[in-house]
Image: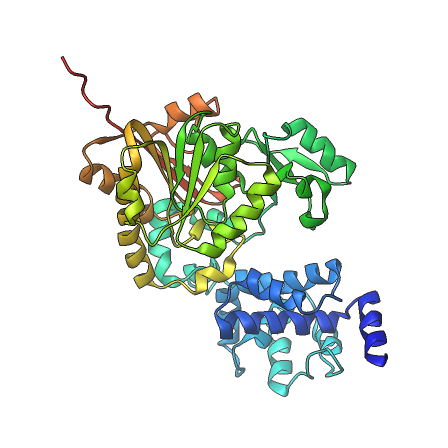
Length: 453
């Protein structure tokens, strides 16, 4: 009974600032030692501590993501002092340099009491005194450190952005908005917006996607009736746009070749008004199972889920030349998603890029076998690197003479309307320029068979 009362009391009370710091350190330790994505580590931590309320979770996440976004700059400062560099000292430095707390405030949080971090060591006290009065940035920092990106990636990104690198990295190191895609199988955008408003959630139309809504603040979406009823799905505006550009129409046969958890599959099916067929292909069975739950909630009935052993699965050969559209969202470094997944950038290595570039071309060329003459292949990445984007499109065209590039300016006008905001031949979206995740799209058409004379 005593333990039950204690748990109930913890459920009713908010965490102290010190307990929030201790939780942030625990999550960051799990990210480092278990090499887990931050969102997975945080979700698991909170799942095992259901007494932690929404406001406390938000505060903990603020501490965690401040460290993950700015780890390079924090480590630059820590290297100047005789302290062990790890989750605890990064959090302490972040409190001083980013959140503006003073030594006395931090020491009160770190008093060694139950659920709070242990007392500051003498070295930690000296560190915080030395950091007092400083901001995160320092003129002596190397450019990569000042922009909080891995040093080896700097030349790749500089080739893309040039003098605009700082602006793009500032956007990438900020928080991402919550974008929703309206499920046109059930509701239009205006009705969905009013439904959210009735639940106290303010949302604005996204600037480019005609089926998107952007929330003004973060909310627990799982509790919303609009979400439970399948009226909206979480999907960044860039991903919504890619699905629209595929121009999947009612009655078509469509493949989502790297379907993942089914976000773009849902968007494609909605655009087809549940008429025709979408095949969601994926090598991960658990992702396909997760997609099944989302499909049911959205009221999608024209999707077949297909588990593949790889890009050269026998199913691909058996179904060659038989689809109108093939959507290929390949695995990539994910540099365009750093706003949501800042921890990912610190796990990347040059050899990862080399391996991905080779695999991307293999996946694209194998998936392209599925499209019929006159049909289209859409190649997409959430990458900002030319090596994964334009260079892959050019390599594909050089290797596959049956395909031609469809100008993005034309396709945008035909599917979304107006002028393409991100390029004439290809689409490149970035956080600083467009407010979306970084995203790249190229569209190829397979030449029709020559008619018999």
